[in-house]
Image 1 (spheres, rainbow, N blue to C red):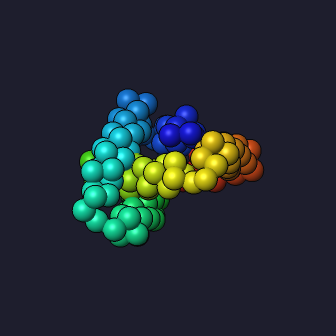
Image 2: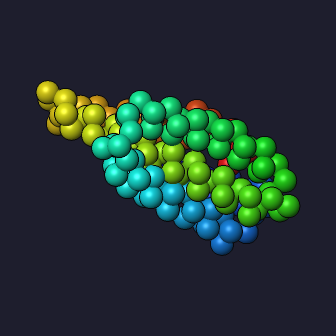
Length: 138
């Protein structure tokens, strides 16, 4: 969600209508919210490592699938929307696990500050160094 404007701009650049690109982003953010809630509820019943592996798998497979589906976006829009929801579920679950882990750190304020710094720095570097790649791949 930190690079949402780039995501939507990249989709529009490859021919997706602005409304459809916005719906794709909304689907991912909805999955993100639901994933965070589901991970939080499942932490009492599942090992956190299992949730992390499942989340990382969903993110990796989902993003690779999105890159493939984006090449023929007009024929596979509905499928791409569901893939983005799955990516959002994985991302939200992983974010919840990370936040729980950081809150249990000895110096949690510093840990949260480092996380925020890393997220914003990597997003800014990605947008600055790879704008053509991000725009081309969505």
